Length: 238
Image (tube, rainbow, N blue to C red; front, side):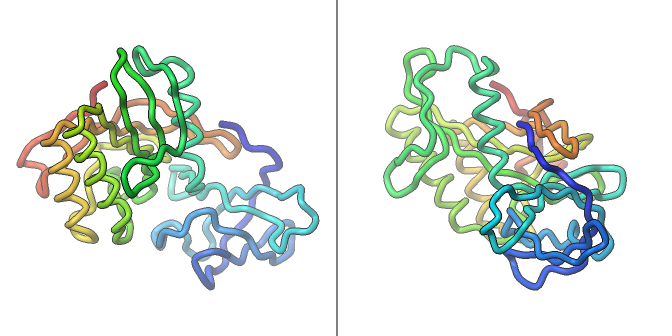
């Protein structure tokens, strides 16, 4: 995935979920934040950002926030990016025997990110972007997500109807130890993820190569779905 018109900026403040005040080219501007998560550990005053200049002169905000520097790690914050890079990854032949890829597939009461056929069998896939990192460990979600729990329940239901099902966590950064549900913030999501794995939903987590103007799915990351690491591993596998 490639971005155009990327410029460096500095984060100043975030008055609400949708906008940030930034310093860019000697001016203070209002920037659209393409991520409604909390992101408090990322958007701290003085943080180095990369933003995308809009080509639409009629927009109220001239820029979109794309990525933020956290220590030595550049983290992509664009919540629209995970689906795009997964589509690129799937279409590039990284998933075995995939045909008939369809985005935004309605299943029961949810719109899941992808449907496709694999070895002649119908499959569903939901994608979640991950930006919360601490001590090289990444977690999801960074805020309670009833929608995420609902998606997991729909994937469980699909397994009972003969589908193959996947939950794909796109970790929007590089160099990590493992991924785990955020048990402290939303234990119901962790419980639903455990139930999904037990039902046969396949869990995948991949990190990304991130530059100021690109995002590319890279390597698989270990998954710990237990509430404590000593309770066991669940390794991602196709």
